Figure (cartoon, rainbow, N blue to C red):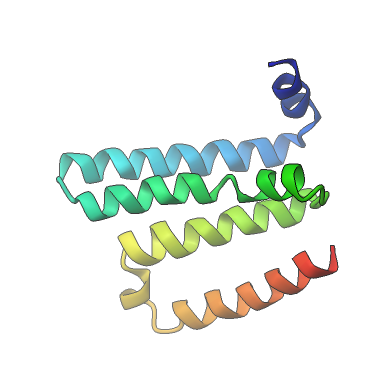
Length: 115
């Protein structure tokens, strides 16, 4: 428990805000999907919450220190692909949504490899 408290204290305030806001948004979308009984989207929301733990997994298990900016970009990418792209249908609404995410993913993977 003390380790968790130290980790939270050492986090950048903006990073904490982004993590909190995105998780809260995903939980809100999940509650709406439960109310609409769209179980596929409920699973996508749960999957998104699991994927949000990837940066901390990379830091803890692989002992790679990711910059705060890179962590924020990773969780925003996950949110953009799963929640906005799939559940909010941005893939259908915006013609280049998929291309934008693939381009961002290429830069993201290069940054992870570089770090």
